[in-house]
Length: 295
Image (cartoon, rainbow, N blue to C red):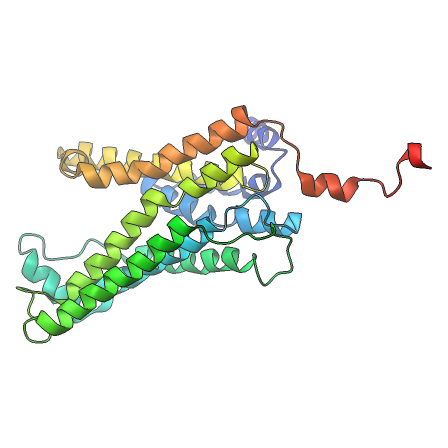
């Protein structure tokens, strides 16, 4: 990246302090494959929202459903990833059920990402209660999201019960109900969360006719990560002359594009539909105590 390009990029995002802070990372990104860049973009995308909340001293504009269900999804992802990485029993059961490809595809960086995501999601959720930030009166988790959370917990609990009561050799035999099915259930929880987690925020933006309080920086980083991930998938498939990664699992590919779809909706809301919406928190902070006509 030339000096001119670097300065142009910095000027383009001059109104976004967090993105300007991340500008020095851009030259570093160009030195790594798209897969590594997507991992970095996704990891960085968790920071803009809590930073924005802290700077505004308010969580108004952020749907509490989003961090709530994010905690559930990434906790399930972290547990399932850790099990596939470090549990001899789960790895043995995976190999028994997948003799052609007996090695799980998860890597240590997947676990690091999941744990990092849990910590940042919990931090963002805590800002509604523990930081003294302003929040909308009466704001609580919506019934649909609460139902999903409870349903997921009960569903995983049911699988645990089936493994414990109907599993062969206490769930150690992979031919029947086995402990790996609990791990798969946690994976399905993460997939469900991926599908629904952005819906409440898109609805909140629509009702308020504003994206104020919802960080667009996290969306830009998220869509960058998604695009780079797809690019890496295309490159790998092309080099190996094997396009099964794209065509062999359309459900997984479709779920991978869900976030990009909602990112596009949020960018449409922010840059076009509700462009120029003012921030009530900032307006209140700069409002004079006594108007001139009242003096």
